Image (cartoon, rainbow, N blue to C red):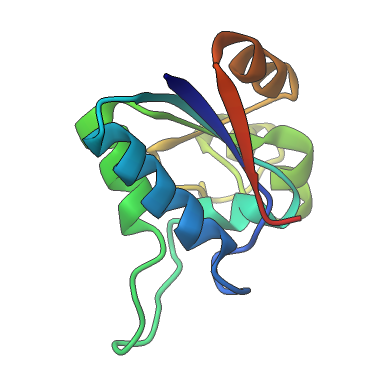
Length: 130
C-alpha cells in the first residue's frame, strides 16, 4: 500500500507530528511505501533547522530527516504556511532578502498542488493534527 501523510501539528504541541513519523516508520517496516509527507499550517514548524529540544525530550526533527535520507520520503512544506511561520529554504530566503534559510535541507517548500498529487498517487492519505 502507498501512503501519503498530511501533518498539521507543530512539533512541540502534542503528539500529532511524532505519531505521524512513527506511523511512517511502521508502514515502511511492514513493506508499505510512504511517497510524501506534506506539512501544512503549524505543521511546517517540523522542518525548522534550528529547533533545539530539551535533553529529556525526543528530538522532533531527526525522525523526519531519517525518513528522507534512509527511505527517500519527500518532505514538503506548504509555501503559504511556511512563509507565515518564517520557514524559508535557500531560494525563498534570497527572494525575500533574508540572511539565511530556516528550513532544514531535507524539506522542500512547494505549493498545495503537491498535496493533491500526493493524494492522487497514494492508496491512502492519512492526516495528523489539525
